[in-house]
Amino acid sequence: MTSFWSVVSIGLMAVLFPMSLSVVVRSAQVQEHYDGRNSEALMDAIGGLASDDQSRRAVAMETLLREGQTAIPPLLDLLNSLTPNIQVCPPDSNLPCRIESRFRSDSDKRTRIQSYAISLLGQLHAVDAVPVLIRLLGQFASEGAGFHYWGPEMIGLIDIGSAAVPELLDSLRLAEERRRSIPLDNGSLAPYLEIQARIIDVLGRIGDERALKLFEELKKSNTNPFFLSYLADAEKRIRQKT
Image (tube, one colour):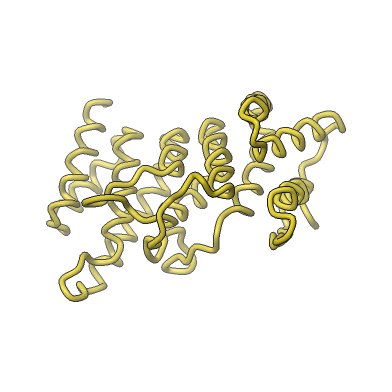
């Protein structure tokens, strides 16, 4: 059965990209007990995220935050409809197989609206968004030297906070297992090292001491200087908060 909110997301995509609508209608748990006025208000607010008018976008975001948990299903459907099919390894995980080579550009309307949805889900502490946000860590390439990257999915995970930690730790553990199983190619950095750095950065900023045990294990298994610097910074942040 098609979710009401999947239909809303498709409607928004039709507005955004009327000539190339390619959103697949997904089955989802149907939200019951909405009255007509609330449904219309949420539809208007979701549509407002696509507006080029900054004032209308601000009102839309305020409305969605005010709705609280009620706004999470349509925002998740919207985010999923705007998210490319990111390959994960192994298939039953949320760990991206690689970091894509393209750079983030806020001039792209899809990317901007994706960022708004992520920001709102983070502020609403939407635990159900954690899997897709971890997958999104592989969507765009780092900029400059080292692993410098700061995307909205990282901010969203940090805003969700401690509730995101178990899945982040599982993904970090899995990334290290896969990094160790794949040899270096022509002296280049092993796969997964970059995604590990992003997860470690997020964990450090969340500040949950549950990460410290795994950090100690990673210091022994991975001596890459970039990696160790990320671990040290994250550990320092956590210890300052605890």
